Length: 279
Image (cartoon, rainbow, N blue to C red; front, side, top):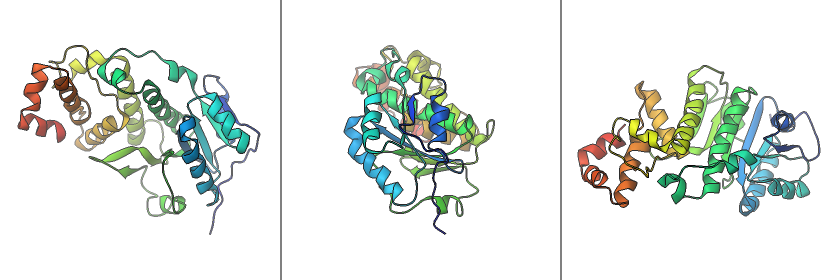
């Protein structure tokens, strides 16, 4: 049967600033249905068209259980002008956190990196603090069918359902269900945020890794969500922590480009590259 996911609370302009203690609880009331919420990571004004397409795409399927994460208040205000009942939040403190000058932090957009960090923290809070199942989505996706019938039948016994990407998973599109604090899937989500935090704010800690003691400042210290999530998947499969493919390989790759002799030697060593990329 065609099931409509409709939040139990209907309000005008629900959501707001996540730095306010009660905002997320109100946003959850206005976005979750049957313990299900779709976290749409719309970002800034430039993503509004794709974001709104995704909202209307899901509404046509009877899916109204959406929570929008935006870069700033104005994006939510603009969304509310069109759909005032849509739950929308922003997180100023996460967007303005000062970051030490690692190569990763300075080579890429500070706004984008802050947004990627914020969305994974928000996903963890929704799952582990609010006991929700979360469909985490990039805004630039198109869905041709309601995914819940597949999630609740064929994949009902799986807690992490992730779009494939190189080498394992895509960190932008995933569904997480039936996860409780302390279980293995909770560890994956929390470990991802721990690694993002570690390499973002303590880039020098890359020297503590088994194959990166040679690195000198400025370190690359890859805090990318997808690279780290793939290392975490490898860690879970192997039963031991690894940082080799997502962090240590990229430390040498980008330090080589900055003139490091040690990195150049490693990147010329096919055996070392194979060991890093195979975890």
